[in-house]
Length: 348
Ligand SMILES: *Cc1c(COP(=O)(O)O)cnc(C)c1O
Image 1 (cartoon, rainbow, N blue to C red):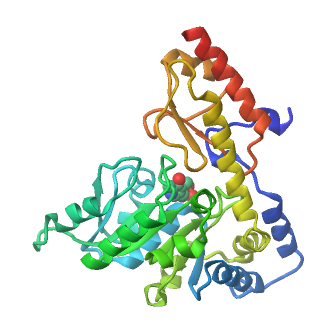
Image 2: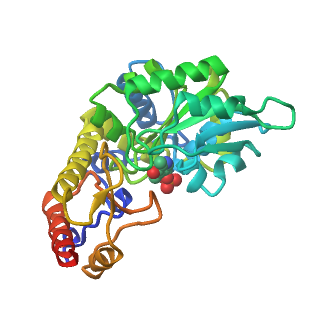
């Protein structure tokens, strides 16, 4: 069976490694290089981030998003602090308590949101609810861009959030496991979406963007990065052959593949959403602003899709989730559309 014949849209992590990341890995594999990040690839990757973000940021490479988020949050607070997030945030629902673990107990304060988006009022409500000695002191806000259900904060929304954070003495962290998809969606620069909008620390996802593995933790305030290298090492996140975590970033950032890949995923999500709009009893749960499409449909239709071999998750967002990766094939998207159309018509 050709791999493409079985392409699925259950997760953007089902995808493989894009050619630009692969080529850089291959180039990094020619010969020996110093270990633990003392190599030229690691320096070049960090410099590529500084060029991309138009600022001298501090950059660290972790193996995955859970570690990046948990360690970044741990760096921003003490164990007696708390972290404000949406109740649908990955840090709350899908990281097995890693943020609490690596921060030695900082509590996540969660709140219900529309589409996973925090607002100034929601932050204010949580941050000002309690200020007595018995409650962990709010210290950090973490937002997901785009959110777990594929909504994108506008620059105006980000700036309103960061203004509120500054006023309340809170640091602002961005979980950007699909950061590139948000950049492609808004058509803005990475600088505009981060430090120019008041983001203190960003976790920039490489895995879902087309790499084999890897998330970059980007500190826009060097003071916050103090001792972060020790934190990474202690947590088992200092790669001994660091060049293989760093080189793919060079391939992604210097070639522009990071943005091209994301724009393609977003376009396939739009293609799918537009094609199934108006099918009987099939309804989009959220606006499609990145590479995710969430649909509600009758249980029999879902079963029908599964019987035809399609995989999708239903434990996020309350519907069937379809994710479109950097290598989503438009013809394969159309096959899914065809099956869904046939099943919806039969059910009507
Ligand atoms: C995928 C994802 C992550 C990272 O998950 P890992 O499996 O640990 O790499 C983080 N945040 C969000 C919103 C995600 O979707």
